[in-house]
Image (cartoon, rainbow, N blue to C red; front, side):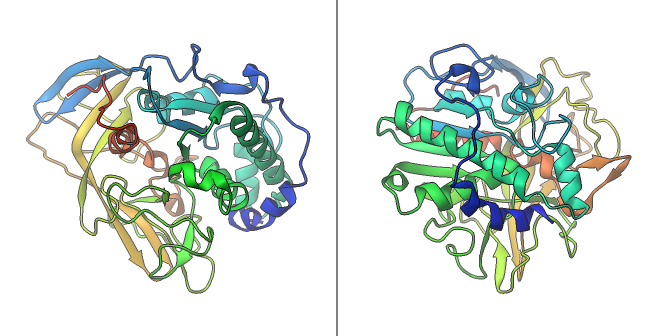
Length: 381
């Protein structure tokens, strides 16, 4: 059974509740405001410009953010079995938070629960046709419990943003559908930024399908909406049967928001943050980030190195990613993002690993704007 099918089955069952982590305990959270944790660790970052390396800075934590961020990380656990344990790994859960979400601490208070997610093994089993409904129920029950604890003890009427990727996006889709739509909490949801998992809408529409009341963001500055996309390299159209980018229900398509400029129909340059120390495979081999030599910091910021455009064609909907290569400048002409398995890259997953990092600067800017006339600091140029 595919993850897409499981998603339609487990949400209703999960409301019955399954005993899980005690989210009243700080140890059940990877990130909480007011303490030192993975979300407050400074991330050394250098600008990578056409003329070479630029300034270097570190991520910072906001001391007066008026917005909260509730974060659900993607599939990263290599634990045995179909669900992860509750001990976050440095190269797994913590690494995902660090690479994909920690920078948002400059724009919002961060709440990231540990949950018994479906493991990489469960995803592989689902791809082979296994029934993953029970592991999905268990994972969602944890996320739901953490959300209930956040509302009861931490929210106190504050506006919030939902942040998730891949499995995290799936969990937050279901949370919106079951715990937010039609409830008072819906009025306080400023944005849901949930790329990396198909969110279905009727073709030509912005609402309906996966979510019944919450629209897909369609213009700059819009709130109370969902930003969603699945990334594919330019000219790599999602093939038939792809796990991402192709709707599996008649009359539906996969929704897409341009993360740099919601509602844009053409190509838009992206403000990106890349993990320059990543060891994940990249088509064409390891990236030489600059002719000036090795990156001076673990992370690099590029502006305009890649551009994005939403594509909608019948059941297909995806974010097309173009690299703006210039062989005459000093910075790389390649970026990664494909999922590699046993020396091969899976076409149906597209540039799944770049969903968050390719537009991260743009996303931070939009969340920061929810606090009023402030700008996120610590951004190198």
